Length: 255
Image (cartoon, rainbow, N blue to C red; front, side, top):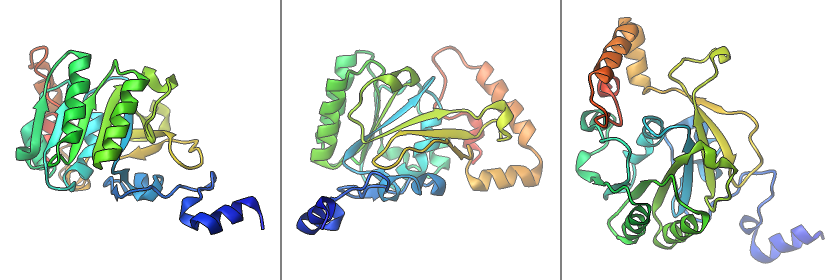
């Protein structure tokens, strides 16, 4: 009997992870709402009780596009936003099925204050999920958040700059969000998800997710108003004053 077989017999097959397979998460998971992404994640969804790190060149709309389908089905309780770079746009979030009464927005520019707020939110029993924008977080600080998420069994998403992908991270799952290349033949508003770290074999190609809900995309194709809505959305964004941008624009509110 091989050493691996002996370990599997001693501790149970579920306790042994083969690196060429997706691992079984130690806790529960929450489906992401993106079937293509679920198939590539251990357990088939976002890990509950672990940190998910979301990297992108510029914080804005992409994290909401990625996370909203799961947040609207997450356990009942507050969804805490720490340091969100834009004002959450209520109508757009509500149109996607997120109860606005659940949102708790904590705004502070001080890195230490953001870390403190994250830790306190993770310790709070009623909280369902924490979304934190921590561009200046160090690895040891992130490790504390990972430990708190594991101890209190919380959903934790940390948004950081794409430049941080070369840094060490305790996150069990790291994703990089980008737009598709112009030559890729994908819609310009699609979302490319690169899985940088997971408990499983490397994924050498990005996953391309639609940027709009299926119902909205079908409606736009049927009505032929896609370009018109794009123009309206662009106009509305140019009318805003600096610092007044919303997490989701008027196009999302049409969902």
